[in-house]
Picture (cartoon, rainbow, N blue to C red):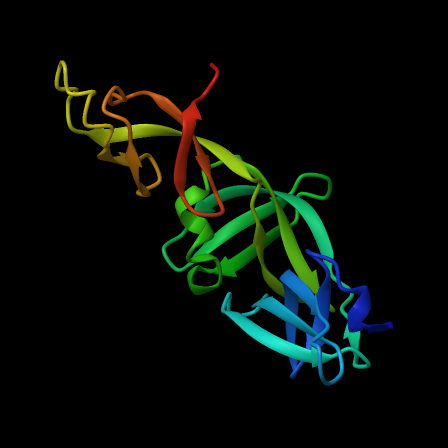
Length: 189
């Protein structure tokens, strides 16, 4: 564990603060006209997924957290947990559903993701920025309905519901942003 000054914050850095592990989502150095400088930050808990804002004095120091990531293949959901396999050692790891509730909507069988651990404790799954998912169900295209510029809901193969353009049909493979669950484009096949 290393102590760093809050002036050394970087997006994506993981720190220990208030007995929890936090990933820095964004931060801002503020120098007011009166008073001392401070750092305003937005931190995401790696244990709960909650995002909170914290303000630190510019002289404050925090501990960095030693986080390990391991590439593992998602195998299946057994009803209570998600099962992942290390592709080198073939060891299997079960992660409770509650711990990967948000990420589960993007997971497809045999997909390789990074599993995050800290001192032997499994914290969750780090998804790629985008995933390709097949449209399982959507309303049929209505000819000529392109002027409104809106969209329609589409249910993906994982159960995720995404708002998509009117020209998307059932069976299309789409690229979905895993950060906010939005449609990016049709996937290149």
